[in-house]
Length: 345
Image (cartoon, rainbow, N blue to C red; front, side):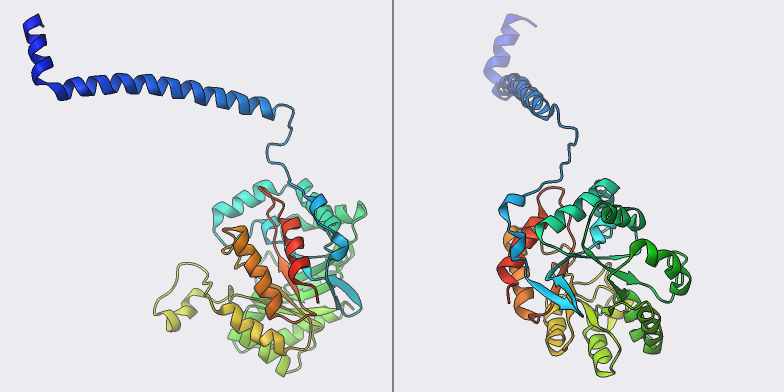
């Protein structure tokens, strides 16, 4: 290009010249940023040297007093008003496969056992679980290591799938291994029987469970089902009650919503409906899904509000069941602090 042409371009193409200058400046800025990112990455890598676990199990034992844990009783057995749930341990997030996979990836058998010991050290004395995941490996190991928590074991007395063997067939193998303190009729089964008008099946299943000689519960997600069992005198020692109707089939929402939802429904006023019945039932209730299966955990303030509301709206003898996923902060200690704060009678 001639000098005359170059001068003409400078005078008559200011936009092109501006872009050239901008690109040059941008390249310089990108190079500078790249150096900073590399430096920050190297600093982070240096800080991680010597750490064998990049996903530590955070603990805050120095911030709580486990002796302050409020207690209740089931029969003659003392039970902490905070019971540890099991869904996160086995990847049942109620939020989809991705979160469930994150949970199962985090919860190795070692971490499950570590969680048991940590919960006990924080003041919890009861864990609730179904026959899922690695329970037959983890729970006996925890007990062999000196663990003293109770086990509230959810059971499917009448098998509906190959994963759930009939209780009469499985009890001889399961009971000596897990040695539960309590047994409970699984809420999905109870709610299904209630929808189908077949509560005699639940009575029959309760009899099988009570034959084990342990305090026995029925679990339910449905306030009307809880009312029915209490009115009809079902032989339960306690109940397990969900704040949300997570067991309701999606097609059963059509009369109320006008269409079928894609996933489980967690409606805002569901806890009010269930706690109204809970307060009318004389027996102890263990109340679960107080955080709407993790949907109400976007802030510490929200979690605080849920614990406060739960304890204010159940009976003084009732307890809450809360699942823990302590990958990022100590949810065990946090839940204990809130139970101590709001659960004192």
